[in-house]
Amino acid sequence: MNVQDSVNPEIFETDTYKELAAIITDVQQRYSHLSDDERTLITMERVDALPEPKSRGEEIERLAYLSLVEKKIEGYEQAAFEEGRRQLAAEPEAVDLLTQEKNNAALEVIKQAVQVFIVVVKEFYHLPAVLLGMKQAQPKQISTQPPEFATYLLWYLPMNKKIRDAVIGDLEEDFHTVYNRFGRRKAVAWYYYQVTASFWPFLASKVRSLIRLGFLTWLGEMVRRYIP
Amino acid sequence: MGDDKSFVQGFDEIVLLAVLKLGKNAYGVTIRHAVEDATQRATSIGAIYTTLERLEQKGFISSRQGESTPERGGRAKRYFNIEGAGIQALADADLARKRLAGGLQTAGGGV
Image (cartoon, rainbow over the protein chains, first blue to last red):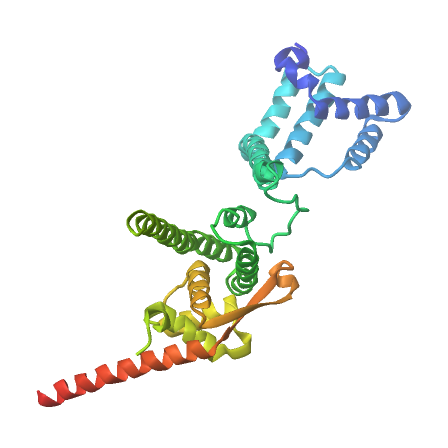
């Protein structure tokens, strides 16, 4: 029975297998005049010249494939392949390591996708305001800047432009102080607190003005109506 | 006794005192810090500015545009300066408090 008949054929389609098979075939063809031991030595040198395995799991995988390729090319029987498998079995953590590394790779892909999503949101959440002409497009801000969304909210505070510029400037100045003392997370929390807590005073001030204006209008109407 | 417009009390008085204490360096950030230090309570910048706006309308303080700095994102500061009417209002409020405190001492002394 040939080795190829006793294993999952998909294994012969992997890149690692093909890479190692190419090395061994090449060495066998080029150095057919040398002994088996000499050819093995050259093969191992070529394998060693490959990029370093990134982990112990990859190293074990490479050795397993190497063993498999040698046996397939030389037409070893099932007994020889079983011996190779027994040798691999001496590394019981190999399968676990490989599974764990594959899971980690999948997790890394998910993490990167989430990071890309966050960056996209950070970059474009102010786009509606820019499109509506309420705000000038700004170059990318560095991480020491106040949260852009909170600053965006300040544009909705009912106050005149001079005061708004002073308020935003004051908050930005204080943001840097808090940032340097406590770090970005606390600085951002503090900034959001200031923005949200500032809504009510400005709103209440405007409401008072409107009530006063309404009262004066009503008083003027009464005077006009009852005093000839 | 002055009219309603010359009267100052509560948070308005604290902010006015902060402006008086800070002198030429009275702008949003320093005023907010001074008020927080005095009251030991967190104060929003919105509360400070609406109060300053009200005090300016009453003629207690005046404001002028200051310099802009990089740490403010290039935005100008707005400096506030106390006026004579503001100092008078503070003096009136202080006098009223002293009168009331005198009454309290009298009541306390009788116990």
